[in-house]
Image (cartoon, rainbow, N blue to C red):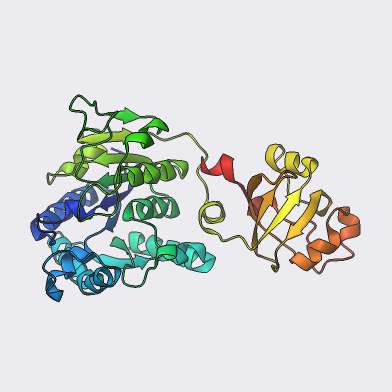
Length: 372
């Protein structure tokens, strides 16, 4: 069997007791399953929910809290308890663990994004099992991933994993909602995710989790665009992960889409960077960017919107306002307003930079081509 880099995402519903508290029995079972993957030579990154479940009883809540403050307080108490439980469980098999807590801002900030990649790479080189969760204690709505399903897909892309295993309390994807349609048939394999699947996908499926099947489909689609294969289904036995990797999992396999795998720079540009402005370009520049693999030159720019400096990320749109992609500019907005529409030779007289390109093709990502 090929040695692979595998992201395993375990949801709250797979780690908790009926009352919503963390189940050490289930956690220990998953630790054993991951240890089997490590013994087989695979690298594993664990994305684990469960901090709120681990912490709310210590705060004397009678049940899982529903307010934001209550959830964040429970996560503050529970994150340490969750890591302690994993550390003790993996130590039985001789494996070290390392904790990483992330928010959306860690992905949108390029330096933090690069640092996250460097840290994860070093942990894997050292044989450590990284355990990642969203930083629930400080995250606010605009800085969250929504749930750990999307976090697991983005981490998988960041670290160039081979596959993503999303373990949940449902045994895969069906052609209709099995709760309302007893004759619904489960997909064993999907080469891609058809739009009609979203029509029957619901929201959060349990009272302890935040991600329903819709979020898992979104995560799977993102993971596939980043070059990962995906499995969505159950993991209820100690050998469940080895079974999944060998094609015997109880769920749905979603195959590699065939798209080009994005390097980290283009992943960051496409998925995480925050545009500081907009450039509108003419049809000649559009053809050069989209079909000829060329860089964007001053002559093709018709309009500049926003205030930004050299190195900022901007959206690039055609003359009709349709978004084409994003890129990092080599000139400020003021410089671009001075040189837009000018030839490269003429523009060189008005700019501080000696680079002729406004956006070099290596710093450009075509949104539809790269992400879908």
